Image 1 (cartoon, rainbow, N blue to C red):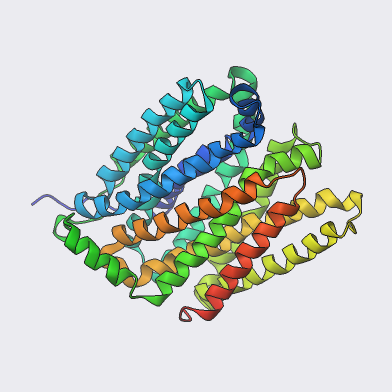
Image 2: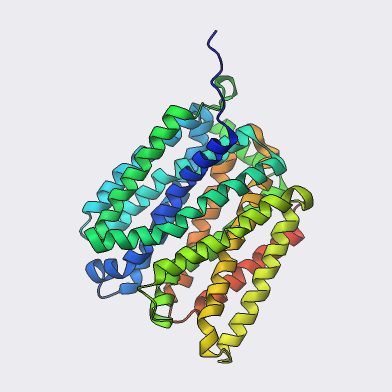
Length: 401
């Protein structure tokens, strides 16, 4: 009898999952310094449309997520992650050769569909090995490693733009994905035994989806994840423009973004330390309450013209750190809450929850991003509404865990 493959050490496993997650961060954050160049090259008459390069990728990721999980439940985790990564590479090559914004956006949607596999199926892979608060703790450690990618991605993007043009960023994506595919293929054992795989027939999938939504905590988690991600994607869409047009810091934007990402990483560290003691729901509620309070104060002070100009930039950086830290303090916990009761259909559960939250969050985020008027006020107003609604959802629904 063939011996069971040796399980990776927890350190290497966390690093691998963080690298798979990093595919998403790299695909979004490295594009941010390129948005002015893309606007000037492909959309000079409507420069705000360039930010759709970010949200089109996320939209494709949401669509792909709907299929990645059921496929992973049927064929195993590794084959689906590797196949999705291969599609991601092909689409990145199409992005490199795109000569119009419309073609670029189409290729970015396809690239997002491919990226859905490593992003979604890695969640199911973690759920195969961990559950409950232990899963939330592992995800916090993953986020601590993962946060390094948003910190360096804009700097890398700016360096690539300066030396080879914005199109060359897509060649970096190809190399990065090839490395993670090789690592995954050679080192990570399959975590879903053949006897535990599920049919792709429609009836069992419908039954599993009905089971999924029979758990109130999962519906609450999806709502909260949707609104949290809408805040993130709206922020990413507007961030470069705010630093450029409001604060005249376009050149130093990658450095500031790196600092914000690194400092906000404390959110994942704090969550890993406290979630085992106080529970996932309590951490999420405290996080949302803090962000709502801070956003409300800053929106009022800025909207009424009471913010001293010398404090405008520092307070905006502080607010940005709070938003990014919110991700580390909420998303891992919300995912763990959603996955806890449905470990036996982890792939489908990860797909449905991620697909709904991602696609709807993009629909919510795009109008906020396109409302950018040279100030941070539209973004702050949108974030305030999103997170206040998320707070209400978590407080009114879901059990204490």
